[in-house]
Structure formats: structure tokens, C-alpha cells
Length: 172
Image 1 (cartoon, rainbow, N blue to C red):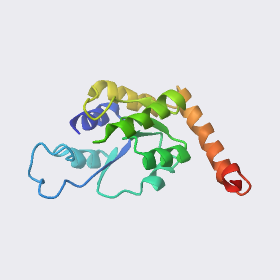
Image 2 (tube, rainbow, N blue to C red; image 1 turned 30 degrees about the vertical axis):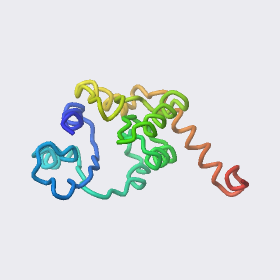
Image 3 (cartoon, one colour; image 1 turned 120 degrees about the vertical axis):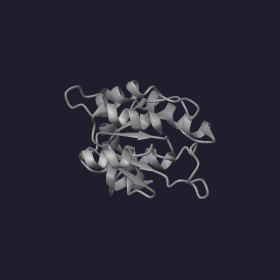
Image 4 (cartoon, rainbow, N blue to C red; image 1 turned 90 degrees about the vertical axis):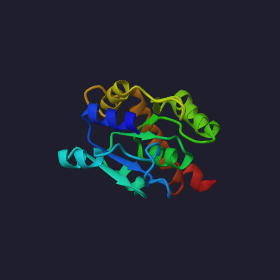
């Protein structure tokens, strides 16, 4: 959580950071991995550059907004599909207690489909905040469009055509 907060601060990008509510009975624990660093959400709210949402988030509505340039994802299947259908560039950081599934999805997104950039290997590793900040900045840059973004938009078009009336998924 500290690495992500530091990276968001250093990157200068505008962002929405959705985090789970702290788990019941752990609100006072300092080692709770679901906690945003103290004062971070207030600081970014004052700056007008970011928003921290604790609890449920309308993820699909956010991903479909034209201002969204990239999505740091834990590589869950639902989140990955929603991002693909939205055509946003994915920053893959597989996070799960059962890492095999999320790691396999990250491999699919990064290595096979080419629509994502690996931000971190897994839940047991933490990215360097400066490197993550640079990746965040680069991922939303319109001056140097990433090839992964182009592939993400093409995949979105293909998927949308498939689910339209008469498309391959509609026919199947």
C-alpha cells in the first residue's frame, strides 16, 4: 500500500484508487495490508489530483470513462475482462492468495495478448515506488502511445463486434 501511495504521489498522474475497507476487527492494526497510508487520501483530495474510494467501486463505469488512461489491476478475471472491454491499458500486478490463477491471467495479458505491462511479479514482491511512478506516468502519456494500448483498443473492437447482433458470440 505504501509503494502504491508513494508511486501515485511521485507520478503526478490523476487517479482513482479503489481499496477494500479494512477487515473487521483489524481497524487498529498497523500491519493491515488494506490500509491506505495515514493522511494520504486527505492529501490527494486537497490537491484535487486523486480520489481514494474505500469499499465498493463502480469499476466498469470508471473504466469506460474516456479520461481513464490505464488500470493497475490485480489480474482477477472479472477485472481483466472489464478492462479489456473498456479498451484501457492494463498494468498487471497479480495479487491473490491463490497466485496461480492471477499469475496465469497476467501472463495471458502481458505475454500472449500484449495488452498489458507487468507492474510487479506477484503479491510477495513489491515494486520500487519510483519505477512504478514512471510506469504510471508513461502509461497515460499521449505523447508516446504504448503499443499495448493500441492492441488493447483493437481487442476491444474485436470483442465488441463479437457480442453485437450477428457477431460471432451472438451467433454461437
